[in-house]
Length: 331
Image (cartoon, helix red, strand yellow):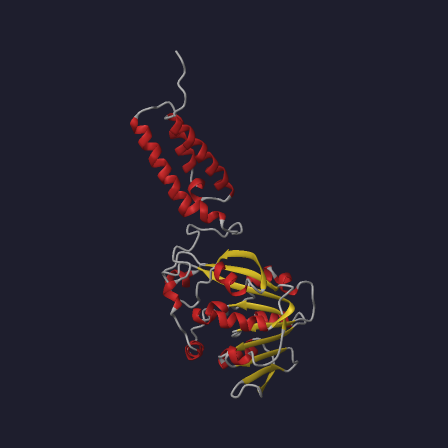
């Protein structure tokens, strides 16, 4: 009696599924890590000699399910790169990449001042940011004695950390409370001065002269002629109103020395669930803002979900750090 040939649906399905399983294994796909591949492969092997209509129907259902997996999981997994240990069940933002809900959102400077007055500053971190520690050399690039800029700095402890390494720090924020808190909490003596270039602005400067924090609008600050060797932008671009991003990026470019290393931290989450700030900033927006003038390198993406984000209704929240350096032909 002649042996039956495997049904064509079974052969194709098994091969495709094996290919998907192999690649997904290396991407730590959650479906396969739960044993789903072994179960489905087993069922298909058992059905490999079937020729009836039910098998055809089952195979068609399989291909539909495979396509859904491809759309929702595999394709997203390939667009990383996420470092090991940073993945969760929601791999990519499910909302529109343009975040239409956030485009018209505007937070003015008075609202930011009020947040500091009311101590609604959960965005402040008491420890040096883990991504700054991890990618410090990307910022320093084996250089010493750098001039490093902190946009919308608040009372970031990272400023003291870098100043203690011998770098000169300049920051700007609209909140006088945040700037004064920095010097008080870090036990750094300081003096207060007027800023001739900006009427109404104040300069809080460490007695040693290595930390200068300006209390004024960021867009007023850039009237002071200066360029920097390094920039640490964590909590700044993500706080800028989406309608102001182009203006902001042009201002940041004007502050960069030719060999400046600009570390930019952005956040990603489902923008359909939160108006912001912090605002969702996808990689495509970074490319649009800086791609013409800068080489852009993605350094790392990490899971940053905490209880505060869960209260907001989010099931994932990630931070991504990029290194921006001016292209050789940038004026």
